[in-house]
Structures are given as C-alpha cells and as structure tokens.
Amino acid sequence: MDGSMLDLSYLERLYKGDRSRMEQWIRMYLEVAPTYFAKLSDGLESEDPKDLAFAAHELRPQAHYLGAPRLLEVLLALEQCARTEGVPSCRPLVDELLALGRAVDTELRAWLTVG
Amino acid sequence: MIRLALADDQLLFRRGMAMLLSDMAGAQVVLECANGEELLTSLKSTSVDIVLLDLEMPVMDGMETMRRLRLKFPAVKVIVLSSHDEEKFIAHLMELGANGYMLKSAEPDEIDTAIRSVAESGYYFSDAVSKVMLHTLVKKKQVKPTFHSIDPLSERELEVLRGICQELTTAEIAQRIFVSPRTVEFHRNNLLLKTGARNAAGLVVYAMTQGLYTP
Image (cartoon, rainbow over all chains, first blue to last red; front, side, top):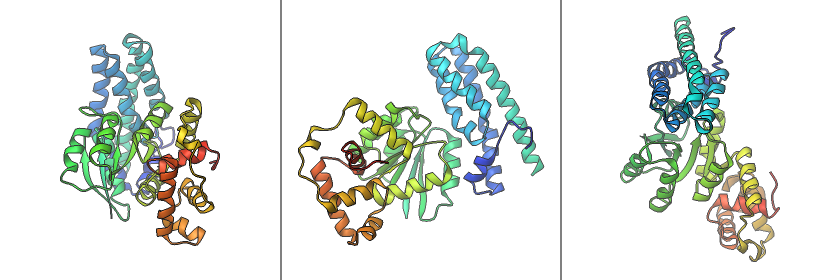
C-alpha cells in the first residue's frame, strides 16, 4: 500500500498473516465504522464534551489496528480538546476526522478488491 | 483449558479479539458481554477463569465491574484491557485487585503471554505497567506500615519472591530453585501472610518498594 495512509502490518501480525481473517475484520470495520463516526457528529451537535471525548476514545483502538497514525493523532487531539477546551473548539478536528474516516473507508475497500 | 470472557462494549474490538483468541491453544472464549452488568449476570451460569475487561462501558463501567467481581467472584482473574495509559487508571485498577493491565494497542504476542501468565501465576504486568505502579507508590508513599515490621523473609522466600517478580510460573520457579511446585506454593502463601499482600500483584509491589527486586 505505497503512499497509503494505512499500515496494516499490526492487523497482519494480529492474525498471523491470515488474509481471510484480516478481510473479516476489515469488513466488520467497514460495517461498524460509520456508527462510530456518526457519534462524533452527534457529539458535536449535542454540544456535550463527554459524548465527544467518548466517541473519539472509542475509535482509538481501530485507528491503531489500521495503522493510521494521522487518524490516531487527531483522535487524541479531539479527546483532549473536548475535555479541556469545550465542544466549539473541536469542530475543525471533527471535520478532519470525518474526512479521514472517508479516506480510510475508500482505501480499505480498495484493499479488499485487490485481494 | 483456560476459559475466557470478553467484556467490551465495542463490538468490533470484541469480535476482533475473539477471532484472535480462537487461535490460542488451550484457551477458549466462552463469554462475550457488552458491559459489566451483562458480565456479572452471565457469570452466575457460566464458569470463567479470566475476564478481559474494558474500562469504558455503558450501563456498568470497568471500575465498578472490577469492584463487584472481587466481591462476588473472587476466584475469577481479571486482565484490564484499556486504551488508557495514565498512571491513575493503572494504579487504581491494581489496587482494586486486577491481575493484569494491558493496553489495547499491545502486540498480539503480549496478549497471549498475559493470559497464560495470569492463568499460571496469577498476574501479569508489562514493564511499562510495573514502572507506573512503582512510580505511583513511591510518589504517594503508599507502602503499608506492616511492611516495615514483618517477620524477616527467608532465603527461599526471597528466591520465590524474585521469581514471581520475573513473571515465572510456579513450575518454573520450582525448577529454578530445585524444589517441588507444592513447596513454591507454600513459600508463596507465607509471603502473602508475612507481607500482608492480597495477591501476587501486591507481592511485586512489596518487592519493588522494599528494594528486593528491580525490573
């Protein structure tokens, strides 16, 4: 995956290189991820910093599994921002995360296709 | 066979972990729960050796679940699997009686090691967690007064204590000091009585704070 925003080597180690299991996990991610990202938008709308921080926190393991450093970085920043600066300051971070989420989705679907 | 329970509200993480553990020889995931309440209810009818417990869950979070597990199911061992690497979480969970603490970002091999270690010796700490615990204890000076007035530890007890700190199993300690596993258990019980520690985690803390072992 040259030039990719993802590094699936952790997932590969996790499932000992078994591509079918990696595919199974990625398909699960693609199914569930929209719910996680929707929670970010919901947190912004509800203006509850706890909701927003929790939504960001929930996505962290996935970002790690996917080897997505920028996604992880922004999630950490959002969690911190929600807890210390309040919801309004978090909007740019949520926007970036939603864009990153879409990019990850596209890249994973391409990975599945290349199979 | 090590019977495992997974308690995590994140379906993706839970399924991913169950998929990983399905490959682990000698272990089986017998329970998957989305929160602490579900776990405690299920444990009434399903026998489990080790729970892999998330901290942030709806309905009943990991902290409360940990407290109740210790009261209602003291024999069940608990490995906390969390995204939090802050001292306050790690130290508090260990104080509540967790047998191990791991980050969700742990390498796959470490998960296997932790489960086997907790099953065999009753605890698992990564180097990072050990350091956090030591730092917290030293900072807060939480060493129990009884530690200073206990009966002196025998040479054999010290050998067993160091083995525990090095995450050796009972069998490995026995082999190292040329005694039977039963004798190791005997010394381990004496260590618990003498130090006032409640479990192996407490023994490690004791050894580290008393300068009997340095990681």
